Amino acid sequence: MRFYEYETWKLKEGVNIEEYDQMLRDWFQFLHDHKEELFQEWISAKYYKETDIEGVPSGRYIMVFEYESLDGHHAYKKRRNYKGPYAPYKLVDPYYHYFNYDETTCTYWQPIEPERWLDTDKK
Image (tube, rainbow, N blue to C red; front, side, top):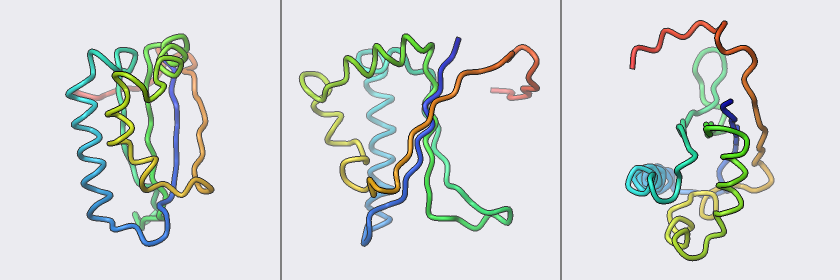
């Protein structure tokens, strides 16, 4: 069964938004380039900004990581120690460069009866 990590954050004061946006692009490129060797358990990583009902940004960003399973999540977290093959990952991980740690949250989700869901994604 899939397992989801839901992370939210706000940026540190004084962050250059263009530099931040570029780092996110670089981070996603790193994921694509190293998926097979470093992120085998990941199904997806999706990036959002929080808004109000009218679409006005709140300043909070969201990343939803989808793992193949709870065990896959734990295996990845245990393996990722930012040493060895993961050392370059820390260099492109925006968490260490731009996140306000006091405004960062992380919660976890497990699906309930996904066979009943409405999913019209045509990908």
